[in-house]
Length: 144
Ligand code: DQA
Image (tube, rainbow, N blue to C red):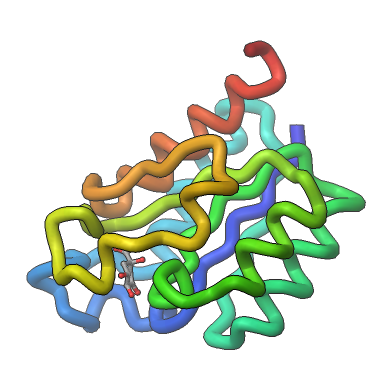
């Protein structure tokens, strides 16, 4: 099984950014944890971080030819991006939405997700473990 993990804007700052919300774990730590977990699960994994909405849309489009599932933390684009919503619909790759924080327990503007209606499900609030849980959920999609 092949899985693409996309990290959206400002997630390259993890480890120093608002650590009281997002914790001390860096994006490299998360990617290393995912690589190890993917190895255990027999998953071929690619990861990409971008601060650009257009690059994320292009990566989603390119996933269509390769990935069996997409795991995405769209960062702030979660709450604004019709383009990412449309790309996910357009490629029809099963998608799991991930957030480190529980967006539903935060400011009102974070409680709306343009991705959630086109995702299989959303995992939010477990810090870096949200990604681990998403990888396990994705690994079980083929079998369900
Ligand atoms: C986030 C939540 C978003 O609201 C925020 O803009 C982020 C991170 C999270 O993982 O909790 O950049 O996606």
